[in-house]
Image (cartoon, rainbow, N blue to C red; front, side, top):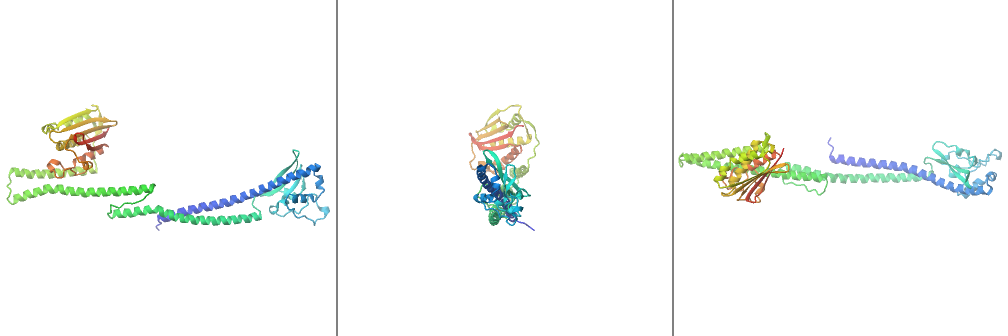
Length: 477
């Protein structure tokens, strides 16, 4: 059975909210019951404190309790004056059988008795003067609190009060039940609100995920223009942004693939068409197999061979560049390659300005052959695309933790829109140039792959001399 993400999130939110609300309701109910009982006990103690002050005033009249012991109704009058209804008296007992301290009928359940039935008046020796001895018998769930009666700074007696530790007031219990009912209603309402919130929140949370799912299906079906619009600043926005970038990248790769195939077809078509025309001319007798003519055919075959080799090298570099690294002296490595190009530069009247601002003993870990290939390619480009009588400048130096090799030449320059495309495979600034002069358009692409394999960087920019500047940076070991 498949459980959707909506069901999982909705259930998790609803259950967690309901659990929190139920626990909170139970905790509030329990704490309210205990707190309310403590409040009632404190109210009783405060009232007994006032009664102790009044009892002190009575005591001051005779400075002992004997006068009041001889008056059996004094305690009842005292309670009434204090605002408490005296407990019912046990008038059925014969006068001779009554203890002087027993003037009221004790309650069977002290926890349900009113305040007046739980009070005792004690002398300084804690002997019961009025009240019930049962009030001094503290049972489980109850406690005895004594309030001092002071006269001239001395304790002359006590008023004791028997109090419950648990909730037992009938009216208060009704109030608590009412509050519990209200709390249950509020809890159910809160759970219902949580349910609605969970539905809305989960739907909101899953909206971009549904958009991602639709986008993935659209891309799978070939729609590489699909974009997700999600205006927020959270992690989901990062995911949707990454998806949009991925689609853009796939679209760019697809366009490059189509252009790659188109360019290959175009590059192969030209020499093949020439070969076909030349061979058909031979077959028709229009041309004779003269040495110059055969040389032209051979040149077309060489052009095709070079193109296929360039394509193979580019594909190989695009997949992976396997390096055989060794310790290479930077200065001597550049000098060795440069020497092989001097004669050609002189024949084309190209002035060569070389600036070696580097330690002659500086070595780096690199593939000697691959770096020579890069340098040969860059010098070949400068030779081909610099007008006769122009200038080529080579700088070799050190920047912090990297080696910098910069080759720049004079006019002609490169248009601004073509500059970022020069490292694309098969791209040439002038598409009308012949392959024999312009090359395959793969050289810079291969160079960039080799430099990146060395954890370096190849950068193209306009030269101050009027042509192109190529900067290569390689990390120092």
